[in-house]
Image (cartoon, rainbow, N blue to C red; front, side, top):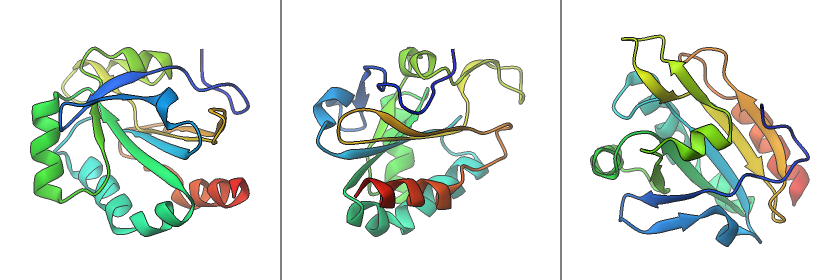
Length: 157
């Protein structure tokens, strides 16, 4: 079932590239932007995450924590984060639990017929843990509406 604005964010707990467990519930009191992306090292995903990297001060000034999530392993994500000098956590959803909880998992990814890849999606969660923005991109080549994300964050502060 698709995530709707106004509902509580699903409880997720994933490992980051430093091998620390990150629980979404522990981030209550902060606005959170979750960006699901299909695969590290692909051109659109790299452009998307580097765009966030380059505008991280905008998210910081909105009192928002940004989390990038994909089904890649913590090791793959660690290398990707290092090479792209990403300045926000990347979380491994290797077991696909978060992608299922947020209803953003392809049964079959359009490229290469891979099963179990995250769709490109973005969510803004307020300080109380409620979804305030939800966007699942129609194709893996589409990017989230970063202006709408910023507008949503501005309304929360």
